[in-house]
Each structure stands twice: as C-alpha cells, then as structure tokens.
Length: 353
Image (cartoon, rainbow, N blue to C red; front, top):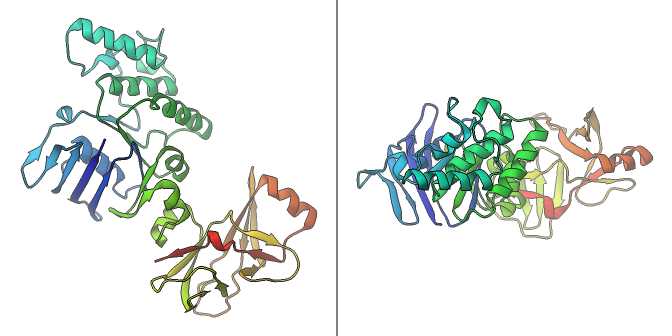
C-alpha cells in the first residue's frame, strides 16, 4: 500500500513542512512532544487541513490543495486510534464496534460478531467502556477500526499514558492483532524503543521537519545528523574537527580518533551511545578516554557513570560523558574495580553532519 504525504502548515512555534513516500506496511514517526507528529496524522486522517500539500494512498487522492480536493474523514477509509481510544462511553462494546459500519442490519451484526471473535471480546459484548480494562478498551478500539477495513491505520501515541508493564503487554498484543493486516500502519511516538520495535521504516521529526528517514535499523545504526542521533537516544556528543582523512578530533572530549573508514568533509559532530563503551584496565590504546569519574547513579537494572572529558581548554564546555552499564556487566566492575580507560568501538562511533 503506497502512501505519499506532503504537508505545509503554519503552526504557533514553527511551520510543519514534511514530505515522504513509502510502500512499507509499518511506518514509525519518532519525535519529541510538540514536533508536529500528531498534526501529521490528523492531516492524513482529514481531521486537520494543511495550508498546502498533497496526500494520496495507493493513487487515491485524499487532499490536494492545488486541485481543491479535500475528502472528509469518513470518505478517506483511514482508521485513527486516539491516545485515549475515544470509545463512546454510553455505548456497549458491540455498539461501539458497529458505529460507522455500512450495510444491512444483518451484515453489520455478522461483521460485529466476526470482530468480537477476532479481538477476543467474547462475553464483553454488552459491557460499557468504563467497565473494561485498558487492554480490553484497546481491543475494542482496534476492532471498531478494523470492522470497516481501512486502507491505513494511524496510531497516535497509543501507549504513552501506560506504566511499563502494561505498555509492554499492550504493545505485544497490538503487534499480534495487526499481524495479518495487509494495509499500512503509521505509529507516532516519542518513545524510541516503541518505534524501533514496531516499525520497518522510520521518520524522525524535529520542529516540524523530517531530519532522518529510512529503514528503522539503519537509522538507529547511522542517524546521519545530530538531531536524529539525539532523538534516537544518543547521549554523548562532541564537536568534530577533521585532522586528515582518517583522524578526527573530538573537540569537547579532548581526544583524537584514528579511524579505518574515511572521514567526510561535512562531519561536524561525533556521537556515541552510552551503552557502547568498552571498559579497559591497564595501558591506554587508540580511541580511548581516561576514566575520570565525576558522579554516578544506581538504578534498579543499571548503573550510570558520568565521566569528565579530557579537554582542559576554558572555551570548551565541560559536559560529562555518560556510560550506562547494565546489570550483567556490573559484576565485572565489582570484581575488578573501576576501569582505567573507556574505549570507543569504531563501528559504533556516529559521524554526524
């Protein structure tokens, strides 16, 4: 199912200005709160109208400002799952699922029965939404959407208000329920783990613009620019100064990297993820930084260490480097003590424009 989206709309703090095309079945949009993610979904659904642009699904035009086309939401065949599921509170489960269905009474009843079975809602047909658990409400909301077989399903931060246990449970359940859905699903979230788990293709948004796009695993492995790296969870950044085609100075960390790969002319920053450091006891080798501990934090399943950079220049901001050590590696530190150095794995050094 091909989807093409071009949206231009002036918002309060910035202009939403995005354009993308995809044939992926699972698309994730990652970005901080207020970056324009939900406005993008609402524009696709027809709930909001862009100032300019064009939106098509499988060559069917939903919106085209130039041609004065703007289909009403109910004509777009797009399912929208709101954050709070937006079930009708005074309607039973079966009536919620039937809402919006077309056809004869018998056809509607058959479709509702089919959805009740598919989404494991047997015995809850006459319950009101307020009598259901969060997982049951999610299944009813999905059943209502799937009942009319939409071309696209839009998921707007569906897990954001949940605790970690319930979030994981409902994410697994939603993946299972959507596994045989042949249409396109677009999930927007500010949670990078959620997006990584769900999507095959990823868009990263910042202040109304797409700053990275491509296969999800590729983007996390090589975000390409500082904004995308930050939004995908990278904690450590330094300004970069190229010394030669295989040497790059990390200005803010006070060290110079020797690289096997060739360094491009447009590299402005270096990034390194907090879980990727390698502790070293003994002599210093290439691509290492002295372990100079400023502070630490003990968390339930990991320990966070904050390391002073080696740069002593006054004009350099003394931002610490973050090293996050997971539980299975903590035992090694308890046995051997703190390391002398932290090594950077060259393959995991992010070269950023």
